[in-house]
Image 1 (cartoon, protein in one colour):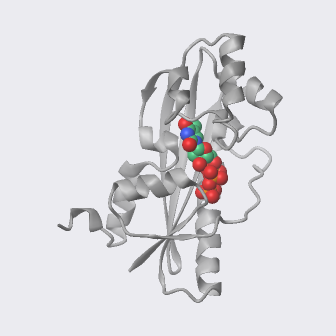
Image 2: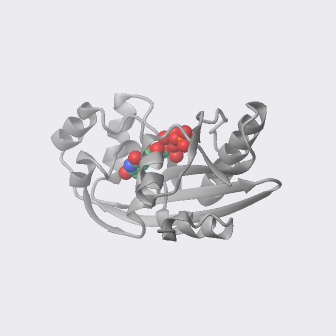
Length: 197
Ligand SMILES: Cc1cn([C@H]2C[C@H](O)[C@@H](COP(=O)(O)OP(=O)(O)OP(=O)(O)O)O2)c(=O)[nH]c1=O
């Protein structure tokens, strides 16, 4: 059965490649990513993953591609119950780093796998402790542009690693696709390619 990745994120494609699962990338799903009033962060991230997966399934059908399973994912940085998405401007990026500096936050990543009528969801929550950063360090990091397309305005897989003091949870989850849960969901769907030699 074909696995489709409904994502425009190059990180998600690289992480799937890491576990040697063959897949086809669908165009990035175009969905409204506005949180609902009062929506809890985990519920929001899971809803986003489900909507991306469902949008991917509709796209697959519309393009006449063979039936398969469609994987969608979403990642948000959460600080004190506030969802931090991607920075909208330089000032916003600096504001987010100032919130994260010296503090602990959560990175929530959800996965949704749509098979026909069924949609399975999995979620990973990682605690990330940031170092205490000076204003100059934050400005220098923001000016690299690395965090522009990333939740919370940083990328742990790049120079952003220098901002992090410690992490408890899933490194791949922080990067955008928790491989621990991905493997389980794929196995449940009968896609356990990784163990075939
Ligand atoms: C915290 C963090 C996030 N990110 C990325 C993962 C996600 O790609 C992005 C969060 O935005 P998302 O909306 O989850 O994903 P996306 O818009 O990049 O891709 P798509 O919706 O098409 O699947 O932030 C990192 O790459 N490194 C990090 O350390």
